[in-house]
Amino acid sequence: MTMIPVEQARQIISNNIQPLQPVEIPLSIAFNHALAEDVFSTIDAPPFPQSAMDGYAFRFEDLQHQPLTIEGEMAAGATVESFLQPRYAMRIFTGAPVPANADTVVMLEKTTVKDKQLFIEDDMLEQGLNVRPRGSEIGIGKLALSKGTVLSPAATGFLAGMGATHVKVFTHPAIHLIVTGNELQQPGKALHYGQVYESSSMMLSGVLRQLHFSVGNIVFVQDDVAALTNALQTSLQEADVVLLTGGVSAGDYDFVIKAATTCGVRQLFHKIKQRPGKPLFFGMLQSKVVFGLPGNPSSVLTCFYEYVWDALLQLASLPNKKRKYHLPLASAYSKKAGLTHFLKGKIVGDEVMPLTAQESYRLSSFAVADCLIVLGEDETDFNKGDIVEVHILPQ
Image (tube, rainbow, N blue to C red; front, side, top):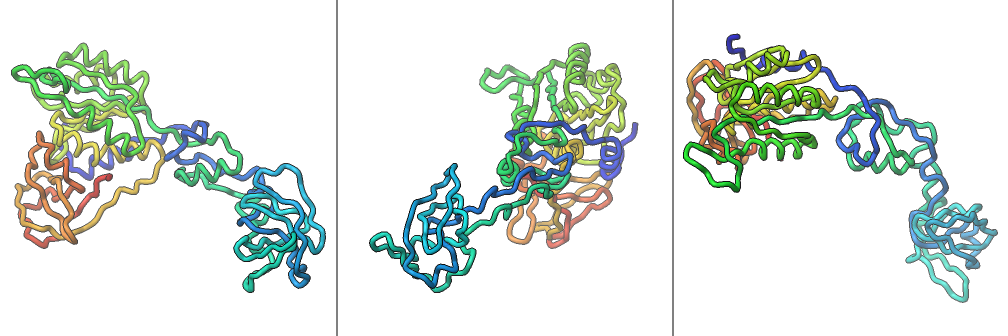
């Protein structure tokens, strides 16, 4: 299969991925999930007229009959309903039920008390002030949140305040990571000749957590086709998405394509006209998604941001809010035609600066980058001040 352009690769991924089926989960773990159905309130919230202040509850019509006699109090959590007699006031606290027959609460700071008599000193007082009416947050049977709403912490709090314990959401994909390579050594162990420390698993686990996804399993496999095939078969039984790193080029020890074929994965593309990350593989086994990422760390991360991220959002029915801008280059840059270049960059003022250390094996530039600069396939020479596309990295 020949190399394809970047935009064609994006379209193939988008056309082949279907959102995962809805599931019901506890509200406590529903953060950043999209609702799979409309949610309606089963109660009035608040379920009773509620004081918004510490002060005194009274009938507004009694304001002209001061002083008012103070009798009783209502604290938050009171379980017995009280009734307020005319020309009386009741001490009340924030969140407490307003006694029946009362309609206004005056702030404590706007009052004076002498011999259990209340004097109100608030010229701005209006009827109903400092009282939260029953159902003022939401009424019973009213639409609380619409299908497709992504649950923020505030949204989960809103639903919890209506008594909800579970919600039906579009599930997040189960993700497995398979790291391949004889040359890889785990950090903390001594390096032998020809070895390098493995960093992709930590990097991908971190970026997935940053985006509110997670890795269900990480497997390290030597460059052995049988071992890789077995690992991939196992992951495909359990995961919705399998990410492999390394082994996707055309070398004698690159076995990802062979293993994927043996497992029945349908290859949809292999190799994109881009740098870094040219040998990216994408395939499907029914609804399961397989990405074969290159082995070089910078290529791994670039391909994740440019392709895998979109796929995960689509699987989870989450809106794609990836930020793209067009900014002037802070310095000139030249490249050959034929490949789209993704450069690590940093936004400085109203310009974007290409960083040094752009090679695919180097992460030092990625460690400080806040964006990727996209230079088109057919373009070659870029002058300072030329407007370029910029993809903002998650922070």
